Length: 148
Image 1 (cartoon, rainbow, N blue to C red):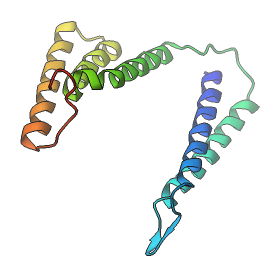
Image 2: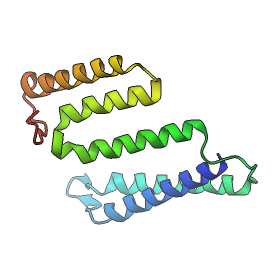
Image 3: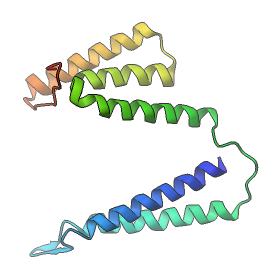
């Protein structure tokens, strides 16, 4: 896990630097007080500071020979792959269908539920999201080629 903590600290450092970089393109002040770049810039500074503290602490510790890919790390990577696939499928299948499939895949990966349970949860989620947002709240969601 030592490698994972160092890698995580460096990743959060990169995120904080990106937040600072992009927030500097927004006005820091406005006519009535802080501008739209004020809060993101300070969040970026806090991210950088915290990531530096964590990374330096981990680099001071010796590597105890722990393996990087623990069983929970592998599961987290699988879930990240499912998230990436879901984002790629949004334009094709639409939000409701993709989110239902996402629920099915994560239930199966993380909880080891039976396929029938995952399928029922996926259908209930997709139909529920479609009717809740699309009809009841009248909020348009991306439909994709499926039209749902």
